[in-house]
Length: 311
Picture 1 (cartoon, rainbow, N blue to C red):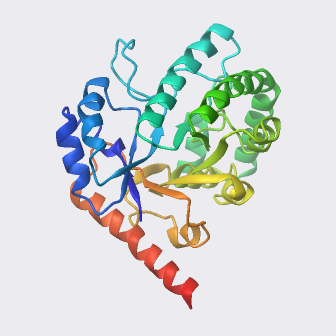
Picture 2 (picture 1 turned 90 degrees about the horizontal axis):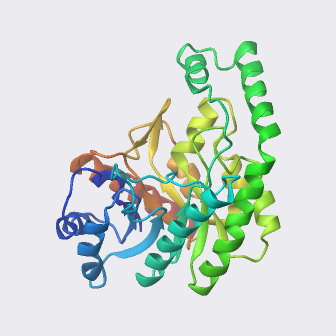
C-alpha cells in the first residue's frame, strides 16, 4: 500500500487532530510528516498518532518547523548540512538531530534529507527559458548546461566535504536510534547530492545507516531539462533505495496527483522491492478529490504489477 505526505495540507490545517482525521479519511496505510508542520500542530498530533491506524513511515527534515524561525515557514533547506562554515553546519546538524529524535519516538525508521547546495549564481531562468522556447536540445542550450555543470563541479569539493562532515556526525546518532537517513535527489542542478555524488557519499560512509530516496517529479524535470535521464539515479542506487516520493509532472510543473501528468508510474513501480516505502507527495492546496484519484491511480498500478508478477 501507499502513504501520503502531509505536504498537501500546508496552510490548510491549524489543528493536529483535524489534520490526522483528514489523513485517516484516505485509503492509505501510512503518512510522511514533513517540514511544514508547526510544533504546535505536531504536539497536538503526537499522542493521537500513537493510537492511529496510520503508521508514520518517514519524516522529512527539518521537522517540525524550528521555533527559532521568525517567518514560521518550514523548509527542507532552512539549514545547510553542506555549508563550508563549521558553525553553520553545526546548526543544521542540531536541527536534524531533533528530527531523528522525533522519528525514533514515533517508530519511524526513515528521515529524508535535503543535503544542501553549491553556492553559485543560479541561472535557472535562462535554463527554463530554453525549455519553454523548445530549444533545450539546441547546441546553444547544451553548451550553456555544460558551462553550468563545469562551474558547479569546480566549486563543489568543499561543499561535499562539509556534507560528509555533517553526515559522519549524524549517522552515529541515527544508528543508535535505528533510523535510516535517506538522501533525496534534488530539483536544481546546483543542489546536493548530484548524480555522481551519491556513490561518493555511500562509499565514504560505507556501512552507515544511509539510503537513497527517489523523487519521481525531480527526476522527470531533470530529464525535461536535459540534465539526466529520469531513471538514471533510480537504477544507479536501486540497491540503496529506501523510499520514493510519487508525484506527477507536466513540463516543469511537479507535485501533481499521479495520473494527471507525463510520468509512467508503471515503469517505476514495477521494479521496486516490496520493502520500499511509497509516499505520494502533493503540492499544498491539492483538493480531496484529486488526492483520492492519485491514490487510486497508484493502487491500480500496484495491483496490476502484483498480478503480472504472480503469473
